[in-house]
Length: 276
Image 1 (cartoon, one colour):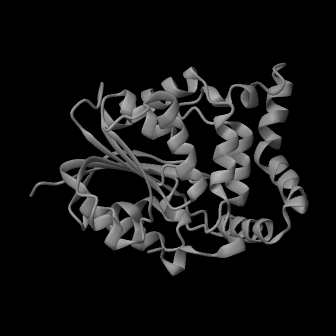
Image 2 (cartoon, rainbow, N blue to C red; image 1 turned 90 degrees about the vertical axis):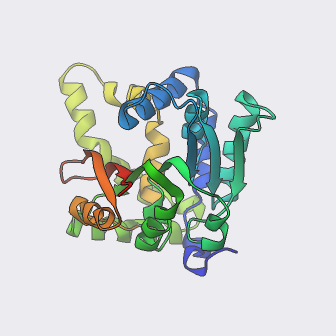
């Protein structure tokens, strides 16, 4: 059953539409980048013999990466178009594979989650802050992690005033008809990329950062990430210490933390569930 707090009808950003466009540009290098990201962040060479739960699978890229690294993968997403994207990647690379399950489901639906079991790795990158009930979503993933299993999440950094201003931008963007959303996207693009673009020009390498964005550790697309950021609503944020304290009180130990240095973006957490 879908949770009413997660259904915001027209105000909710259509993440799946954005991911469907991203799949058109997906190549082998981006897939390898995703694999290397998982290896580096989880501190493993492979995931052979491990179970991997992708909470909010989006494009399906990291489910694919986990499966290629040997994991038994279970992917789910609230957005039907995101589910379709993940199913498309499974069709392309692991057709009829019984070790990769793709479903539609919500991290706010405890009845659904109770049927999933427990996993060696629970992965949810940039998802839980878009549910409309972030702290409940953070709580709901706790029982899904095995003892000494890993939880890998990323949550938007709380910048105070700037975060509040971006929330207003996101609300305006999603309230506009699709044909007028460029009125928000273009100024936001200038805000997000203006200084970087000027820097690249002054270095004599125009648009170098933009062109090489997909060579980053997550293999993502610059324009699709701009649209995702501007449109991404619901939108909640947290300070690193808030997330750390939340999970420490629930028996998790922090293994890795990557912050965005107090700026715009996500803080990444890799936590291990204690067996004590």
